[in-house]
Image (tube, rainbow, N blue to C red):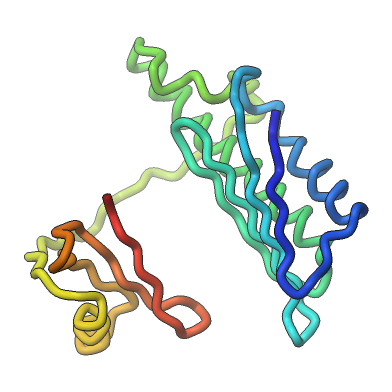
Length: 183
């Protein structure tokens, strides 16, 4: 049911690595309905300081699951990523099942199978403590980065002057800049 797209950066993806990743991530299949066609995009990286990073993204019909882990041990990172993804699924399913109790439609709820009561996760209430309204000004990404630096934030939302679409620039953990574009 889950197809795999496994890439390696600075590492050769051997048969043993491939089979280990497929074995661990395939354990998530039990949470999905049988008619789901899923592709797990797995990116394995090894850095010069001998640390390994595992990133897994699984786009599903109503949710995109994504987890990553960096450690000295590649196989350990695969284990932790699988556990993170499983927690995400259980948390999402708990929310969906609680919502289903209040709403009788089945449109949004056919991605996952039902969770057993012991698998449900107790979730904390999400309280929005501040609301901020902003005027999106048309500009290019370079100007947005300058604005982000001027206000000393980690991200900046703007309207792309060429496309008219809303975009976001953000500072990544490695210090570089990322750009999120909307359609």
